Length: 94
Image (cartoon, rainbow, N blue to C red; front, side, top):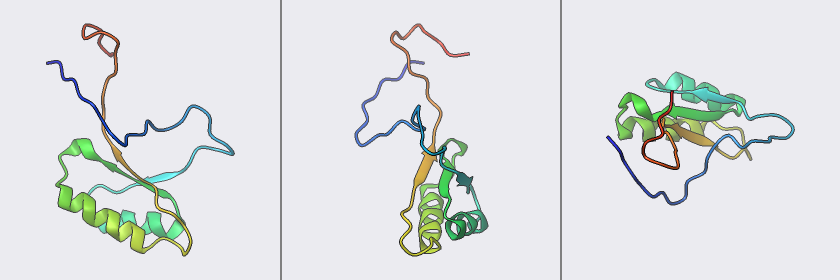
């Protein structure tokens, strides 16, 4: 199956060069404990969007994470998805 799409407000992550080091993310898939932990220590939050997790749960974990961030800390939430990018539709990933 070949799918084509266009995305707005999309950022490929992680960038090639990161100073002083790559950011640290904590995964939260189904329970609020990981989202609370990530917020309290100021890590970014990554949620695996490919597991079929209901969007309401993703939204709830994101809100929980943001409520527990230290004062003045910005939130960095990533929804992880898998995709393959190729110049031609016949190119396949391994």
